[in-house]
Image: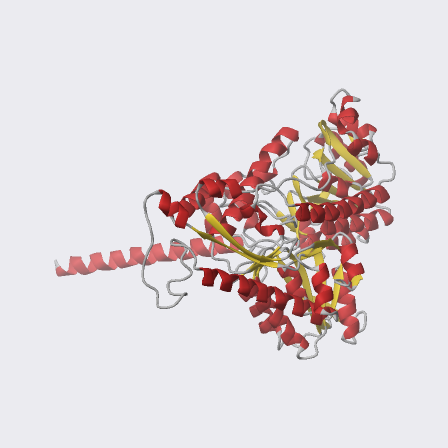
Length: 628
């Protein structure tokens, strides 16, 4: 009996060991799949196919595979603008590439600076006598910004094109807060600091309307100028001045109207489009499906044309998305994460540093944490250039005050030098249900801040004084960085937002130019020869599990929930996610403990809505407000 027991224990042990072994092999195989890099061997003669599903961004957001799998929805695809530009520039001189195809069928959008950079790279491909084709069901403003630079613009006969121009609506909650008896205590400095208006008003103030009107007017003029220059035959005035008459002239056929107005060149389905591309790129010997043509996908092409990293290194740190305290990111500018990346590279013998900013701001403390980390480079006499992308406002500009020289584009949105804080209190709400608050205080600040019983006048005054002092600190930093008196900075600050052209005239920006211009300047300041340096982007590489997650959730790498091909009605429905995300951000800004903020409400942010922000989570936020 004792012998049988020992044999049984041995068998159980072997079974457990085998289970552990198989589990280890399973997770090793899974890790291999998740970390698999694109295979450069997939590049072949033909067209470079660029499927621009989703968004064009400065920095891809981090993907939490477990959160995404639990949510059951694939995140929207994000393409880094610099990757697209690099691929296009490589294609221009690559004998294997006969043409470039931009599939905009499920494209959602991007910032004007990014789209202009990609468009100019498309121009360089065409200058190399290689055609650039675009295809989409329906073209909007951002689609058209890219398509204007193409050799041939194709649209599905069931689609078309509409140009809306910048602008839209904000949501205002003052009446709702009154109904809930929630006191939104607002502390701000800046006549034009409109980020708090949703909680104190039911409409846009005259100052905010003046500011946003000037900003959007400048951006609209710049957009039209860029599109008309790239596509001279386009009839933008006809399309935008009386869109109803323009559409009715084609009996409501948007595709035909777009064709007649020069927005597109040809109508055809995807098969006809593919046959046209095949005339240039050649037939696809691997695929006999209708409309197939020889092509290489973007990911393997980027892997195949990866640049060398010889010579001295110029560090590039990216500050993209809302600036928050902590380790958040990439895609969100976690102050601690970015400061740690900078500090880790401080002893890496970098010749210079370029700070690439694409942020509407956020937490003052996180912005200051990043600024101090940049200052540590200047303390070692390392040249620091600041490069603005689409948006570098409020906290984004706070960060920029640590640089030696600021580069921006005419389409950049910047300024918004102002601060605010919002704190909800519920003394009136609890009174409605028969609850009161009372107690004993040894000082005027005992038990303060009290969001249930209300704030004492002393605490209220201290909170406003803190915000006022933070604004003074902001002015001092800008004054020192720009070499102008604080009073002169205050006159162009007060939360006012500027386009890049105006900012340069006002002295908030030194010169026009993109990331390449900032890198060239930094190299020159470091005394490096043209071929004696290479950029080094600080931060860990993104894990390669994105495409696998999409296959597990939807069976396609190119079809996130928000990126389906859309006519006008479907695109309107897609706005639901954007609107819910905006409401959630507003509610979190009111209910969360975010501290003093340097944030630009007027600045458009071209990033995917947070996937966890749903109608259900929105209700939970308002329930939490009432519960407090």
